[in-house]
Amino acid sequence: EAKRMWEQWWQQVQESGIKPLLDFARKLKPYLHGIVASAIHPLHTSRVEGINNKIKVIKRMAYGYRDTEYFFLKIKAAFPGNRR
Image (cartoon, rainbow, N blue to C red):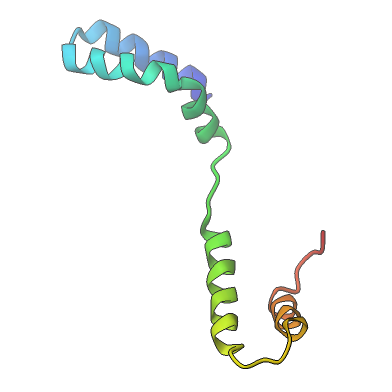
């Protein structure tokens, strides 16, 4: 679907004859594979950022823990999801 929409847009650009638009489309063409891939498979880093933030909070609270084992147990307890 995304590839088809690109082809349709490309055709409209060619028919328009607007030079700045033609230049813009020509510069986008080498990146078409990545553009289509991002439209098909949207990836978001929000979940990873949230996990990193929570680990940093635990780390700040962990100042003074005697060993790292307890620190890692606290992190594992904070994320009781699927194990890999």
